Length: 143
Image 1 (cartoon, one colour):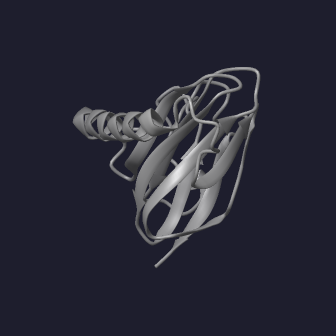
Image 2: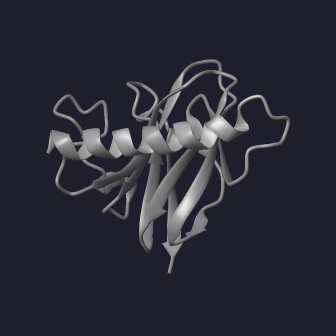
């Protein structure tokens, strides 16, 4: 199942890069649904519409973060962990990685496009210490 994550990340990276080409050097704000990442927290809307969403990711924390979009489980306790219990097991069959941005520098903003299905969606910073420290947020996707 490693291919699933790799292909989704590649697609997300291509979409992110394509969207940022138009925003680079512009004074216009990035457009989309905004999520703010700080140390041990993700803040933003907890309700989204199904379909393609442009997610604006702002890292207001002092360290690098990542933003992984996960569907397939309803509760935090249902999110599968790696064998050491420290990270989300991104290869688990119980979840689907919809999109991911692996490297958002401190003080930076990025745009990630995700196609969301109705139901629960989780936004996770899957960096050791961050995920279990509280950097996971649930939102509901409406049809």
